Amino acid sequence: MQTLKKFYKDERGINTVEIVVILAIVVGLALIFRDQMFDFVTNLIGSVTGGEADLSSNNIRNTGNQKID
Image (cartoon, rainbow, N blue to C red; front, top):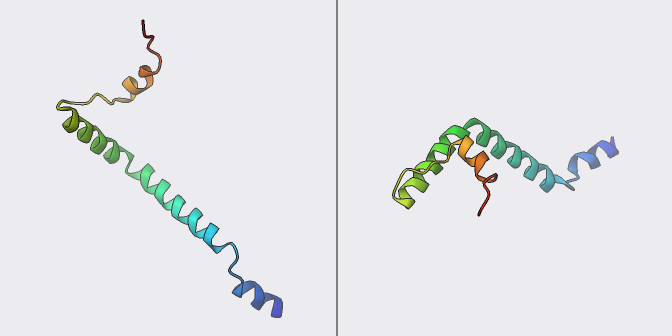
C-alpha cells in the first residue's frame, strides 16, 4: 500500500508527459485543419507578393527538381 501511495505522489517525468500530450493535440489539429491552414498561408503569401501565389502540391513537389542553367 505504501508503494502505491509513493507511486501516486511521484511526479517525476510529468513534464515529459505534458509535452507529449500537447504535441499530440497540436499534430491532431494540424491534420484536421490542414486544408484551411494551407489556404490561409496561400492567401497570405499572395497578398504579400501582390498576386496569387501558386502553392499547389504539384508545383511544390516539382520546384526541387528544376535545373538552373
